[in-house]
Image 1 (tube, one colour):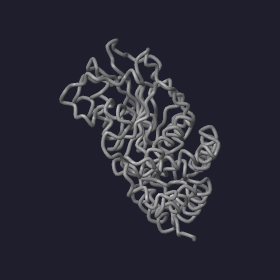
Image 2 (spheres, rainbow, N blue to C red; image 1 turned 180 degrees about the vertical axis):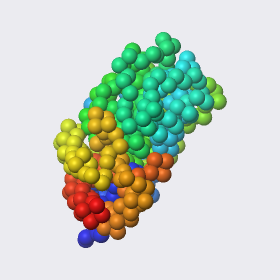
Image 3 (cartoon, one colour; image 1 turned 90 degrees about the horizontal axis):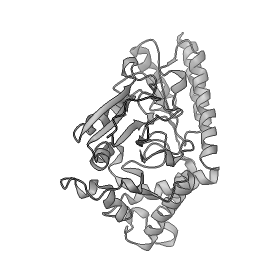
Image 4 (tube, helix red, strand yellow; image 1 turned 60 degrees about the vertical axis):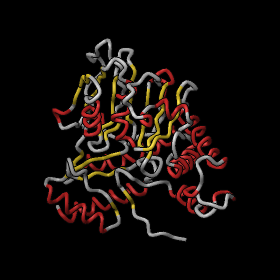
Length: 362
């Protein structure tokens, strides 16, 4: 059966791989002989336990997650982690943050409710168009952790080199670049990612946290659900988890393994992004907004000479079957999010359309 699908450049929820969607479709009414859909299934059943166990095992294999890290599937998405991270990790009540865009800025504001926050570097001076030098940060000795957003979805900047934390724990929000390239998990104390961009449907975060950071001496006012220990001790099933998201993510993990893993995915993503960036660098009408060294492979913001022309481009692309190219409301302009599931053909087709638009509207 053929479906009339568009090239969806949304920043999230975003495209999922078509082979995964087809597999989910085929199992919708009767998951592997269980007689029911995963959405109807008890999270306490043996069938679902196998689903979550396989999902974790496949993710551990994909990322090479060491045994001393817990993998947690937590409801609430990445925004809840802006509070959960300081609630759980601020043992001394001190943390350092690097401000590189809208999402790290929001995380900073939330963390300030729970302790002393030092913004040790920022790229606000040039509208978050680069990653500041973090090779020699002024980090107080009693700092509990250093926090970064490793890929800023709205501003389209990404870290090419991790900060020098001077021996302190590194926490990274990887929401919009999770599983897009190899990752040495041991470099981090904690990684978390909202899954709706690169691996599944909205409503869940995957947290990968080193065991020694999971505390049992939190402020008693911290809700039980907001303690990482609660989730770690209960195998991510303290309450009914987001069973559907876990199932879908598990399918994507298997798809990535079959593809050849994160090294192969990284090569695909680099080739794909090059098509878009080469066009922007040669265009007279369209211009990228990020310094070349820090360009994201996942989120590509760009602009024309005016907001009116930007709006005209968005309308034209939508009419032609290229959806969700409008930039975030906080920055305007245009943005193409080309996550793992976006095929290179989609980017090539978009570029050809933009070339044609430029020729006709020069």
